[in-house]
Length: 414
Image (cartoon, rainbow, N blue to C red; front, side, top):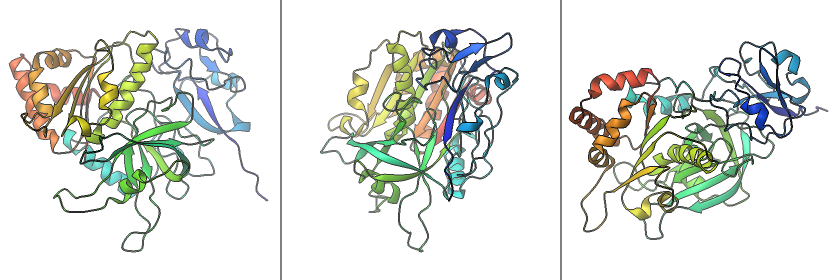
């Protein structure tokens, strides 16, 4: 008889980027955090995973985690001697990779999709310097995590041509940490036409790192039901229809998480310039919700601009909640291309209209650009950046590679 190993998601502090400001120790309600002259450390026996210490940290050092056998948690004496975090150890359920490491093996389909989605920016870019360390490839196709559907909500109007869903997955006791901008893989049940198991389908996470419901082990996805191909011919998307048809209580096999680049900055004063269409709103929604919770807590934040395109208001995910956000928190610009009696407006048109304000943000070295959505939007957005930069004394052809190298320009399109 085999005894199952209890896995602990151990909370740690990264000594490489910690500035020893003491905010975490002051914030912790159970006195789990202490320090000496060298390091700040977390007592696994005291930590209740309440996340109270996460948002006050100015560098993201506090947002570090390792999956460990409960009886092998790193003791305080060992943590006090660290110069950097140890790598994630491999656990019995499959290869696990810790912060800053590279997964030893990714599904071929994941690599193919990732390469295609970042092709527009010229390949993978480094993450923002202050981004929290991501976990990747914790669960593989041979040993997936099993999540339970706790909600499936339609985001589009009844008469809209698109069926877009907000789906909440609960992971129970399974450790599945994700950051804003990361993706997860869904394994649809059944076999394809060739009699093989369906390959992995990737979806961006739409909730912030502390969950769709804070302090619960869950996350959300934004999924559009695919009913036709890129040429307009009838086609049933396997992954999207599977997810959109899920009911509360259904079980879902999940792999990942994936993504080490398309991550939001954590440092105070960072600006977010977000451009998206359709379900490309998922990572933007995650980043916005992360900062909204900080804003509600009274934190001082940088500027945030959102350019969001859809056919009509009824087909724009999260339209209602977005319109209710305070204008001093986020500057939102909507563009609709199929509203009867009105001219077509796309995200590139919105960028040109706000050229002065966009250029002002681009001049700031604390500004990070995130572009996500249909691949067809890339060319128009690039042209808009070129034109608005030229009109405002900037050279986009020189600025773009500089931002890319600095981890301040990120593209994921499909």
